[in-house]
Image (tube, rainbow, N blue to C red; front, side, top):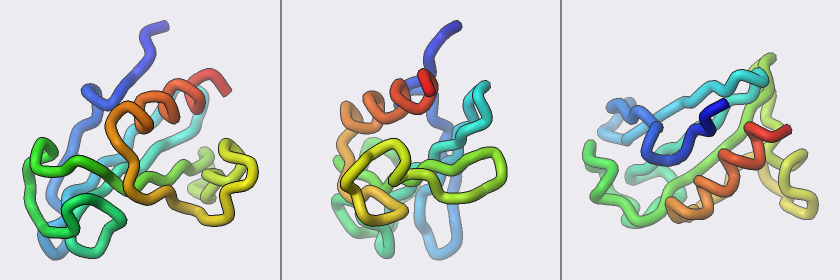
Length: 99
C-alpha cells in the first residue's frame, strides 16, 4: 500500500478565501488541512496557493465524521491542531494510515 503524504493533498477554495482539503484514507479515517485568515495557520491571511503557507490547521475524523484528533495524540486537549508544518502533517498522516 502506498502511503499518502502532504504532497498528495488536494486543496480547494473555501468560504471567505480560505484554503481547505479533506483526504480520506483506506481505513475510514479522514484528515482535514486548512489555512487562511480564520485558521490556525501561518500566515493568518487568505490565499489560494498552498505554498503561501508555512503552517496549517489539522483535524482528524472517523468514518462517522466525528473528531478523533485527541485519540491519535494523547494529552492533546482540542479537536484541532494548529500551526502544523508539512513534516508534522506527514507524520500525522502516516500515523493515521497505520491505525
